[in-house]
Length: 407
Image 1 (tube, rainbow, N blue to C red):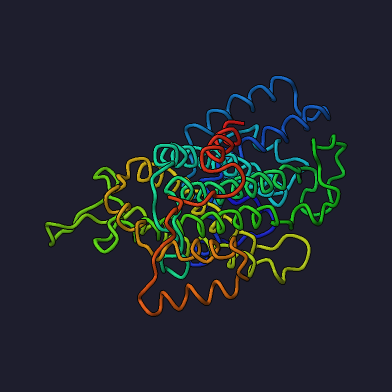
Image 2: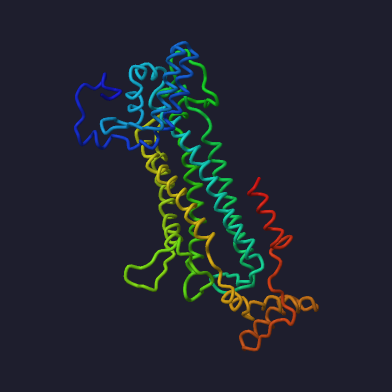
């Protein structure tokens, strides 16, 4: 029986039931946590006895672990009410599925943010270990995919960590946005029952049941994270080609070909790159859902979970798999040394050597450019293996990155 069967006596057509039914079983544990918070409010108002509260606590803990959503349940909320038995008929007092789902989704998104932050930290630490081991390994730096100036592998990998640290901050912001509680808003205007305010209660009940900004913040953080993982994946794909051969793929994080016996494919990097499209699409999709909705709750918001659930799974999987891949990459030192020994990489040094002799930079640039064009360029006699990559150099940057990640 649906929770609204008292108003609608006629059974829904099977096609309508299937269309309306929520695919939200993944929300079960979060909804149990939110239901317990509401049960505590009912107990504080004298509407649940101490024994009933303890029964609810124990039953909800069991449901969160064992599950129990069935095909006959309209959604996870009705499943919990059914699984609570007679107590379920009391525990819905003073709330609606509108504030119930908003509370559960906020708890879910909060957990997803924490999970993403922890996954980013593990991945960043795996990168940092490789950056430390390759701190002085020279490699070409690129602009426009053309060799530009020499850097080190350690410095390049530290750039990945900088991106991930910004991602960590974005998920931290999304976590804070998910903390306020919509409990007490009920359908849209609260309840006549004298219930205590929920901790961190939102100020406006209409906004509380209609707001999905916190989900958009989470999806935005996921989208930018995958934009970064896509860039990392693309570079690994390039480095692993026979044309570049800067790295050799580990067998525990690569696949073969069903037809070509010699192939070892960077599937982890490729799939992380491919999933960026889905991450971007989920953000755009939910933005399109909420952009024109009148206050307060509308069934359109059921689509929020279709975006958030797979975003969490993809972020968890990609960060873990890329950590294995990056942690086991084998850098080809001979190939890197040959590439970073290209004399043209030191053309900027030659121009700056002329600047130190008092020649204006634009004239020095033109002089070196003519030498390069005419094939007569010779690098400076004393050339740096790599320029100082910002204040302090690579080793100091490695120490600073580890301190930030360990904090």
